[in-house]
Length: 271
Image (cartoon, rainbow, N blue to C red; front, side, top):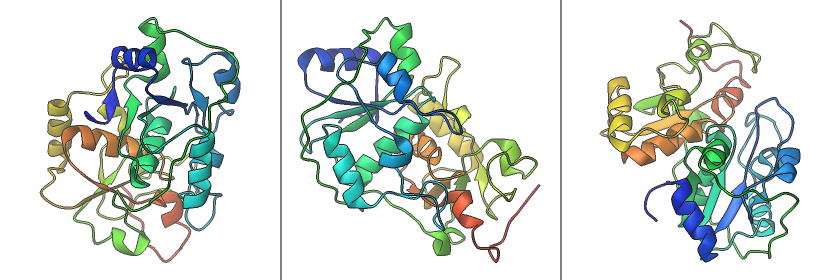
């Protein structure tokens, strides 16, 4: 696997050779499900994956999007055609946030070759990619979930992480606005690297050199342990993806802010 991203040109080549499992993870936070958009048109051979049901457990003390149970995730990926020995590419229409969640979960559960389409659905359209309507019914895969490949931290460990990154928008990080969760603010000590800064104006990821400089300016150099959180553990994977491009391995706090605030005794910082 040559990095966590794949270009539209390289994906087109893989599709031509018939050597890839393609996952359509279109999703908008607070918006309608992505399945109707998928049925209306998707990249040929892609199977739709629902973030809320396939890539997350029900909301609860672990936040709005807890990690799915390994067996549930395994079955969802098998139904989508994922096999252990076949490359997987995920894409979305949300700047890579939902596709990043699929990428992280598959890598965490032991799949060795998973990438995110750089620029997603909009890049595929802009570059003249083929479109297929209807529903693709893949042959069932044989993926086996073996969780633990990528690092995670839990609530009782977060405050001890040397470098904690908050991937949310600056106004949510500062506690000035909170459109989703019941409490505004951040986990004490966190620094802010909003996911939008990972991208160029065309919606594709910055180069590895640019991302290293971006994160270094915020204090993320890889010399100390790093963990990332967001609102519910979904968009944080976008920063994890960018850090992977930059050559820095970081942990995910799956519960993120929505899980942190379920315990009123946990400290909150604002400003």
